Image 1 (cartoon, one colour):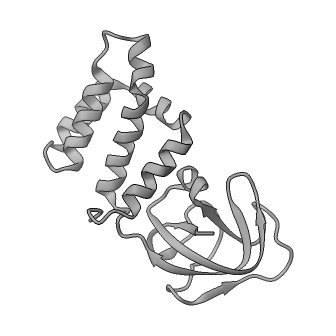
Image 2: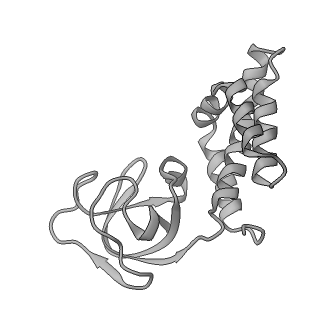
Length: 174
């Protein structure tokens, strides 16, 4: 089973926890009982990753005991294998555009004369590709509100996970 750890800058915990993860290849181990959300090394499976995104995504290996929950796993011993450099600011923006665009039809069915979310997504995609300014991005986002983006996070997690994996493992990720 492929596992992941989402971390902040310099291998710092991003979604709670303490300390710093050691450099890639060095094992980290905890003592005591594994308790979800309380004690142990918390990791993600592919299907969980969409719910735990953050600045850095690492592939992880683990040994020994594992406790599986609905949206994460907890292990006693793990190590970072490699940082997925394809997960960068550009890819994060493009993925957000893909998510929003994938469910945009739901918004447009209810508000067929409101093109603001579509234009905001188009502007965000152009910005990610270096074709729009920060001022254009801010204006488009302000005009659109967050209706389409909010809908995207509530819909079709399976599709989102598959799309994330495409970005993380694409050759064009940089």
